[in-house]
Amino acid sequence: MSTDEHEVADRYGRFARDEAPGRSALYAAWAARVAADPAIARLLARIPATRRQPPLVFAICRMLGAPETDAAAWADWLEPHIDEVVDEASRRSLQTNEPLRCAALLPALSQIEGPIALLELGASAGLCLHPDRYSYRYADGPALDPSAGASAVVLESRLTGDAAVRLPEVVWRAGVDLAPLDPRDRADRAFLRALVWPGETGREERIRAALDIAAAHPAPIWTGDASDPDVVREAARQAPVDATLVVTTPGLLPHVPRAGRERILPVLAGGPWRWVTIDPAGLHDAWRPALHADEWRGGFVLGLDARPIAVVDPLGAFVEWRAGPATARG
Image 1 (cartoon, rainbow, N blue to C red):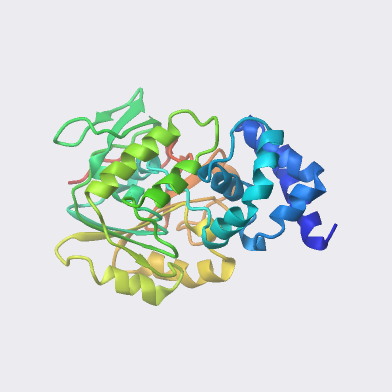
Image 2 (image 1 turned 30 degrees about the vertical axis):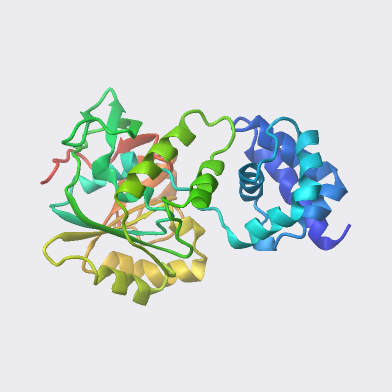
């Protein structure tokens, strides 16, 4: 086996052993087949090294019609379709766009005077640009609906602590992404749905409904590097001056190389806007006051203007408010 083939086998073996179990039995089986079969590893080694992540490759296979049965059927399908898989993987990247993250963002957005202009960095298809168009059901907590009534997207989460939540008044919304996806494009929609791991109940339906909302209310998503301060400042200049500009980075920064994070963090924390982020506690030291990662275990950190205010599930399934009693501001 070549070096690339060994790297593929090792990478997929780790995925089968450490990441897929308990989340997707199908992906665990597919990855184990790659690790054990040099011929399959050789095929996947044709994909550029930066595009070989198992969740990305498997999503592309499913998008292209791979049978979602057993590893043998998938392996039989892969060889005659490898050119298509390599082509798609070479131009796509992991762009998980989970609208449920809005349930984690909402307690922070509720602390900001409206109306707001919303700018998301790493927006993908913009599904987190519509927090005002979704319904929310917090277990043992508030139920919120848009003024027109219950949304087709109902976000179920758990909220503990003294946070007050309300739907924001969003008067302008836009995003920046290295490779924006179009919620109206059939292939992009299929790709986003395929990024949902087999076995994640209800998630694909939620994403499909959110895509319909984003397609009906298209927001501009500009192509650009969100770690470039000039790109962010130029995007921010498009926002209306009579609204409070809110820049969000929900789950973006872990995917930005360290040099890029160090370049953009001072800009995010010191710009003429409010900044809402969801990050691992130990990812950076921009938090004010500084936090001790051991005290923020159990999830990611929700931050408002670089101030840690809650522990949250990175995809929005729960919010544990830590900032003390808070009042929703209109």
